Length: 468
Ligand SMILES: Cc1cc2nc3c(=O)[nH]c(=O)nc-3n(C[C@H](O)[C@H](O)[C@H](O)COP(=O)(O)OP(=O)(O)OC[C@H]3O[C@@H](n4cnc5c(N)ncnc54)[C@H](O)[C@@H]3O)c2cc1C
Image (cartoon, rainbow, N blue to C red; front, side, top):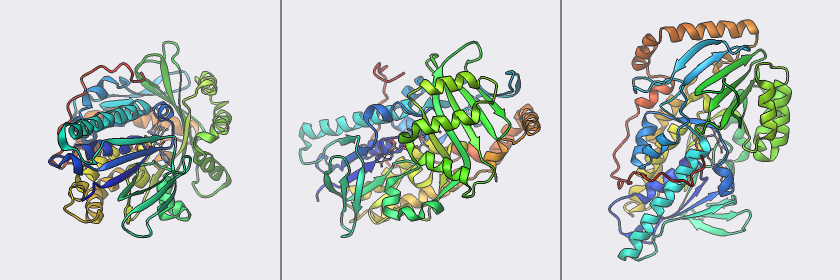
C-alpha cells in the first residue's frame, strides 16, 4: 500500500504539532510512513514574529511533555507574576498572583509565552521529528516514506474532492496542483479551508462574534511601571488596555480591546469585523481605528499609541468563537481555531490546539498503518473525543466580554471592588474551582489517552537561533 499523503494547512500551533505526532507513530516500516506537507500562508519569518501572550494549561502542558518541548517552553516563558487591575493613576485595585503550585488555574497560567515564540518552537520541533523519519529511511527502511515538506508563503486556492478517493488542491502563488488522501485545515479563526469546503455563505452562523475587537502588539519597555506583572487598565466606553512582560525585559506587550454593546450587524460592528477579516493587509486602518478609540483614554495610552505607530508586530482581530456541527467533510478535517476557536477570553485556545492535534494523530494511526481503508472512522473518533472538551472550553458567562468591560466609570469602580472581594477570598475560590471545574480549571480535568507514540527526546540544547 502506498503511504498516506496528508496536507496540513497552517503552520501555527496545531498544524506543526499534528505533523510531529504523525512522525512519532510507532511500530511501522519507514516505507509506510505518511508523506506530510504543510502549507503556510505567511512567510517563515512573519508567522513566527506575530502574536503576543498566550497560555498553555493542564492537559496542554502534558502534550508539551510528550512532544519533548516542555523544558524549552518553560525556559521561553514571559515570567508573568500575575495580574493587577489598575486605575488611571496606576493604583492597584485587585491583584491575582500566578499559581505555581498546580493547585488551581489563575488568570496568569503556569506557562505564559509569546505566540510567535511558541509557534516557532512547534515548527522547529516538527523539523526534529521529520529529520528522525529521514534518518530512519536512510538507515535501511528505504521506500517512499519521508519527513515533512514545508511550503511557506502560499495557500490553497482550489480544493476539490469530487471523486471521493483524493482531495485535489491548487496552490495560489505557485499554481502547483497536488492530490492528497487527507487535508487538515489548521488555518486559524478565519480558516480559508472552512470557507472552501463548507461554503463562505455559512460563515455568519459558524463564527460567533463576541462583540470584542483587539489589537495585539509590543512597544519598548519603559520606566518602573513595566514590571513582571500584567497591568490591566479599564476606561469608560467599554475599552481596556493590558500591558504585559515579554520575557526579554526589552519589550512590553499590549492588548488593546474595544467592546461594542450590541453585536448585531450594526454599522460600527460590521466595520470592525470587516477590518479584522482584512488581516495583515489592513494594518494601517486597524491602527488608525485603535488610535481613534484610545486617543482620549488617559493613563499610559499616549506612549502606547506612539509605540503602536512604530511597531511591526501588530496583529488585529475580532474576538469570536467558531461553532460547527461537524468538523470533517469527506477527506477534509478542521483542527484547532479553524474548527472550534474558543477565543482568547476562554484562556484555552492553545491548550485545545495541542490536545486536539494529539488526539487527531492518535485517531489516524490505524488508517495510516493501512488497517482501515479510509479516514472516515478516524475522523468520527476524533470528533467524539474532542466534542465534549471543546463544548466545555467554549462555555463563557453570558455577555462575558461586556461584563469584563463596564460602560461607565462607576461600573469600572464596582467591577474593581468585586474583583478585589473575589480575590480576597481566593482560598475559597480555589476550592470552588476544584469542585466546579469551569473555565480554565477544566484544563486540569481532561485526561490524555495513551496512543503509544514514540517518545520524543527532550530538547536540551539552549538554541540560540530562537527569536527571543
Ligand atoms: C498572527 C497571529 C497572532 C496571534 N496572536 C494571538 C495573541 O496575541 N493572543 C492570543 O490569545 N491568540 C493569538 N492568536 C491565536 C492563537 O495562536 C490561537 O488561538 C491558538 O494558538 C490556536 O492555534 P491554531 O494553530 O489553531 O491557530 P493559529 O495559531 O491561528 O494558526 C493558524 C496558522 O494558519 C496560517 N494560515 C491562515 N490562513 C491560511 C491559509 N489560507 N493558508 C495557509 N496558512 C494559513 C496562519 O498564518 C497561522 O500560522 C494569533 C494567531 C495568529 C495567526
